[in-house]
Amino acid sequence: VTWLTRDVTSFPVQVRVAYLGLLLAGLWGPLQWIHWVQLVGTGARVAIGYCFLARVLSLAFWN
Image (cartoon, rainbow, N blue to C red; front, side):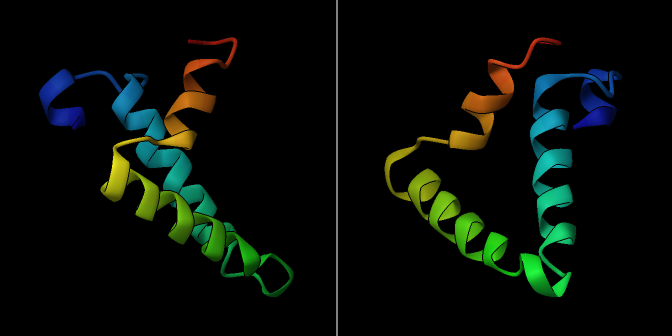
């Protein structure tokens, strides 16, 4: 996406970086439950087209 927009602060890049950050955080033992949250969120995105992560990021003060 960054090669299309030429902007690392674009919204799609923010969503992907946040998802990757959650994925990496879930690799740590006490935070493995984050993977289940991601599974539910990805399932909701595929099934009904709603992305909670994108919604939360859109409400962030820097957007």
